[in-house]
Length: 112
Length: 112
Image 1 (spheres, rainbow over the protein chains, first blue to last red):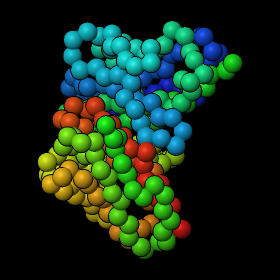
Image 2: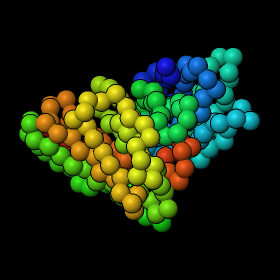
Image 3: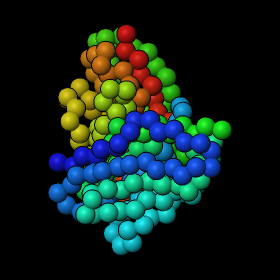
Image 4: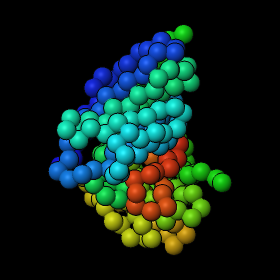
């Protein structure tokens, strides 16, 4: 069975600092991996997706993630945090189709 | 291009009642998925429809059902409501079965 573990339910960074949100997955087959973001009172928005090929994936709003098969990780980073990045971030895995297994989420707080 | 539209946005029901939630996908999207979001269980997959056929179903009791119409619009129904059914129900649409989901803002159901 697939599962996703997000380390840290809350992460706090200063504006302009590096953002690092951690995600580890377990999957019996090569997975599709995703990061979604949810702003308050809104649905989720796709940030980026890994399928095959290049292990460094660039997404929207300056975010990127690196797929490391040996570590079964797919951590999300952004070099410089902005106040508008404050939201909840979800890592997700899928073997096929649109049946995603989501992690518990990480709330990112950006301090001015 | 209009996004995914979910109605109603908020509703309050009492135990034992039933509820129907509606989702209009983005024009041209043939796949609709439903997810339940709660503080305790997080985001959980309910079902997925593609061209009116249910392709996947999550681990929910038979009280939860759904369907998709020929115009790709979808409805989900929950019968005999329980307190634990209180949640944000999110609908997502996509062009194909790639995991790249476009979410609506959700229908927030409160069961009293």
